[in-house]
Image 1 (cartoon, rainbow, N blue to C red):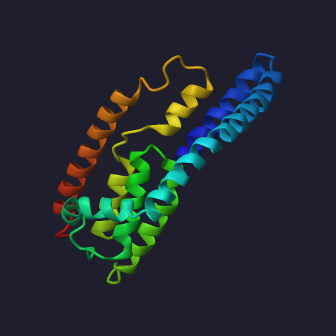
Image 2 (tube, rainbow, N blue to C red):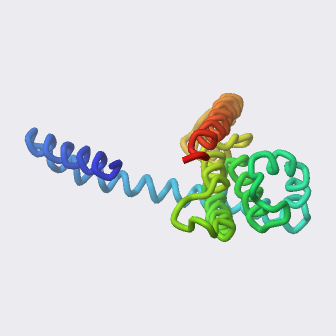
Length: 195
């Protein structure tokens, strides 16, 4: 559906530019947009690479395992059907750690691994998402972000005087989002458990 919305906006923009006799604006906007996208992407590579390196160091130093032990009671509550030493639990913790650091791009591979591991536990209905998969998706989508590194990097790239001023509001907003995601997951889990 979203693809149709974007297609409609693009087509509408081209038609309006053509009717007004300024079709060259479309070409200029496309080229300028592509240039800005490439510049922004290349600038963010350094930030993402740095934090991926930090994550690898944390994993090698055993900090991820320590974090997993620390959050194990919460993980047991959120994922009661996943065995405590299952590889899915480690991938979930890594994914959430990356999300907490504001590294959505770095969290994606761990999220895919977590879903693959959760699918291995979903033998009864392989064509339907399990409760654990739904919970993980809800938490992954609405995860709290303590250090929004990507946003800070973009603000720094575009000359913000104080690129970190958004940290407080980001923590509050993402905390609210995660809380709503967990509550909605629990409510929907109760509703659809008996169907």
